[in-house]
Image (cartoon, protein in one colour):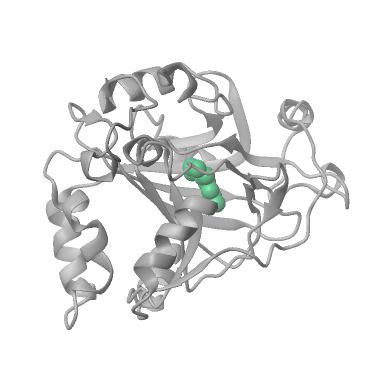
Length: 299
Ligand SMILES: O=C(O)CCC(=O)C(=O)O
Ligand SMILES: [Fe+2]
């Protein structure tokens, strides 16, 4: 249990509270071992911008080892962790998310990704059938210039008097991810919620064996709005800590983000102005977490 001094708690009393919801049973599940997985994946991206991936081929032991290494780091004294910060752009961060005043009940590590390293890892964890999972993302991952990111989030249990049956501290405020896709794996502590088209927030049942994949803003543009980036947030848990690890797949900085010609019907116009990934990143950096960042790029 993390004990905080009173001033630190005051900082969080201004975070808006929200009613908890029950687990949502309608999250699309994509089984990569099934032949219809591609079609179902497209449907899930169109309807939810979010799905759960099973039979992905990544061994559980690999993920739990990573999780225990992460926990070792997050359990260090605060002064030790601070030595790895601030996250500008990579490193350790605590409570402050981004440069514009967003805070959450979370500490985190932002790591850069070396494509050659990922390639080696994927070969070592999939010696027999490397194409099972990574085929889908390999082009993105292996591009020397790709601007991808790895993030470890740690949400300590929140203090009892801050949380009750109808109040929750925000661990990570609502937002959409700006990249193409985000692939998330968490331990079995709940907290992640997604925003549905009907305007409701629903809780995603945690599953430490699976990945949860989100459509990011860039993919929304690349599909000219057919896929929608999913708004999501994390509520802190009053009893257990949540540890999540997320891969954010982005394109090279100078790449233009635009609808893919192969997806456009004859005569179809782009809903978006022209921009590069670097331009989008710069503009996202100036915004608040909950802002509709794509808004200013819409025609
Ligand atoms: O930690 C989680 O479960 C999600 C965090 C998240 O949305 C993010 O880091 O972009
Ligand atoms: Fe996110």
